Image 1 (tube, rainbow, N blue to C red):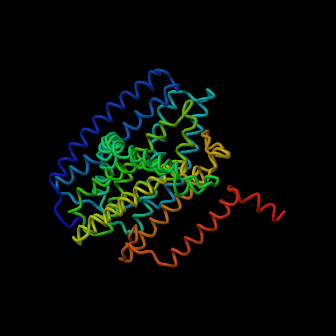
Image 2 (cartoon, rainbow, N blue to C red):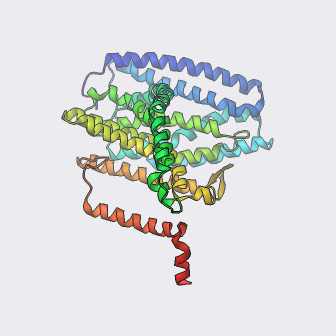
Image 3 (spheres, rainbow, N blue to C red):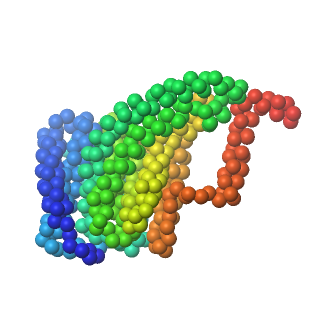
Length: 439
């Protein structure tokens, strides 16, 4: 699979990075075992210790992968093509992990399970819960790409996404909002003052859709907080290997691996951050995060593929990579902020709040949020399958087409009319007159 000599510089960097990560993981592991064995705080400290579990996993697993593959590269050993089990097996084990982990935590909360046992067993379930859905998405994509990369390539991109991309994201996420604030805030003020002059006399629906600076700047702020820096940081690993990527399938696969590494670290962060009351809600947060298993991997792969293609073709690469980057940022922004934007868009937040909710493993989730996340998940999987099919056939898939057919535009306009006219009639001043006519 590797048809050129491995990069000695990258191999040395991988070995050193692996050693540092292993040292950090061992240090975190000693600290965690101290809490578990000596019961400093018992199960009450489990939530605080979840971040330590993440550090242990990143250090030992990520560091181990980087060190082993870097050392093998220096030794001149070739790496075999990566092979993963069928994707559904990952989901089956994920279901068992959710059930077993939640039962363990609930049993501890009822004093039916020993606290030390929970703290020794739960870290494994915590890591598996953050990893299995993402690995399932990788297995699904790689099998359809006919295993285009080696274990070494995938492992190094995986570690890059979970380490280098995290560090760069942290730096950019703290810098970009300040810079954008200086540029956007004056524009937002003048836009708001200008729109105050536009009183269309309707219920506010059309102002929400076409004129609302709040919705626009809300989405901009969401994009700046995470999507812009994260999508830039995640593609750094594939970018460093761009000169060594031999085909489009490999470029897409390496982008998937980098995004997957980032996603697993982020999953552990969110699962630890939102778990409440002895970690009872860990299962709910983990299940919801599992819906977006493909997201980060797909968004990074789209940019990595565009970068490779235009590096091969030379002309116009800035525009094509830029479109791919904006497309990924747009999908990321919809995932992060689309729910609240949708509620504001239709006015549901004003009329009924966010609607009813139900419990998933102890975490209460709004039904409307689950519907939006499912819709976004279906969209992202559909985009992934489209890319996989085009890569299998050798066709070119553009994330943002430069030309929209008149038929597609007419269909979109017709669908918009079907939605907007009834909503405008129901929420606007015309509704009482319509009722009077048919009443």
